Length: 269
Image (cartoon, rainbow, N blue to C red; front, top):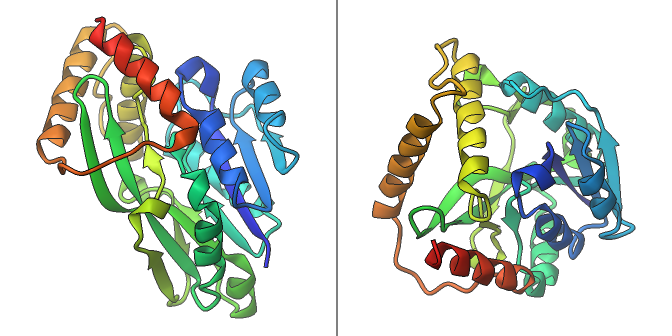
């Protein structure tokens, strides 16, 4: 069976995402990696192309600055449809897998041929501004067995669902769902770890406003209220840090130097 992985990105170089490490880690266990670029950014596209011959780029240039969840839904649908593999794995561009586990990851995903959907948890690592590590089950990273769904005549599509549990696949019939429970095979979610304060505030404002739009609510922030957005973000991170587990944790080798540099910058103010 052929395993495809797919990402959606919007100016990842500008926003500071660890997209190269993320896409590179997926190449270690995938037969094909589809990257849907929602906004034109030549520097990042050139770097993505150079990662591996497995990578296929689709540029829509249709993701606006002031976006909403419908734009995400549409791009996820493009990525899923563009995967030519029997199984399509959806990955976020700030999630990094351990390359030393690539063989195990591939065997685990391909070793569940009876599952229509395979869920993979994640390890949340947040450095900025409140350090925390948390291992959680998640529906963010999942694989769909497109071949089996087709053979069983089960129709499915990515659904926004008005921002509630948004942009998840919805199936017209009951499916068989399984998961990978070995945490070493889960990706590490770096989220805003490598972003500057300015990048975080920009993302935070537009993200929350996108959520509000999807739920027909007034915008939470305006672009001028950057200090208010930063305080809200810090408070949000503090709440997450308070519930974080104390665990023995090593970063994927592919990204250790970058994490060390981020910690040095943080320690130096």
